[in-house]
Image (cartoon, rainbow, N blue to C red; front, side, top):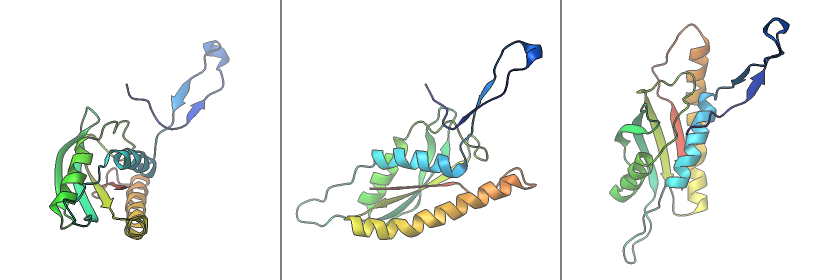
Length: 166
């Protein structure tokens, strides 16, 4: 069962309609949705252990997918690899295991392409450095989509972005 995320708003009772109160669920913004899904992705990433004395790989992976009717990713593909097949596979597995993509925010339709930027780092310092600019870039891109939606255009050609890290 999916639980809508957002705020609830109630209207004052209409005397003509009796004492009924109508409650409507608020909608997530693209940024809020991206943050919620990003936290789920964070929790689902399994950092691959190196073999023998090898050092941990690290990198940034970009994974494209579509939001299906079932609220899970479909057509999951690697759009930009990290240079490490181990890291790339870990990011792809984490995206494949995502669930609960619904409810989608205004501006993201079922079947629309979304991109997850996944950071896998050896240590907190490396992780913080890699993720700092990615989060900023994602916030700017998602804000641009929201701004276009509030204008005259009904859709955006830009893909919403989710940032996750481990």
